[in-house]
Image 1 (cartoon, rainbow, N blue to C red):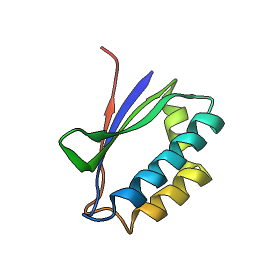
Image 2: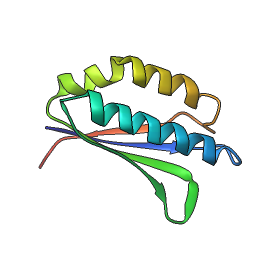
Image 3: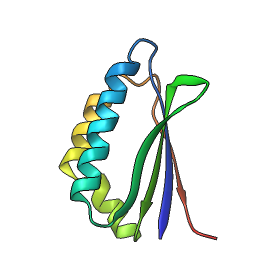
Image 4: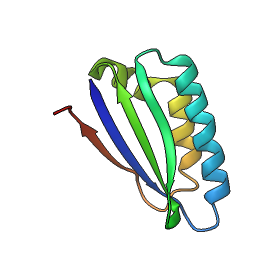
Length: 95
């Protein structure tokens, strides 16, 4: 089992566009990726310019498959224009 937290910091004024893209990728991942057990975007309660993805995969191979998928690559390309800085990604292992 692999967990992951990704933090996206969105450029001010681009929040609506970013959230739309995040909802779209979440739908694609949850529909198409069997090894992905959880893929949910959240906004920070006190800062709508921060988006957090909580992700869980059955195995590291499933995470790698996610990263190589067409829908994820398209999402990354869309997000280039709305992010204030590169995402922070932390891969987690169960305790």
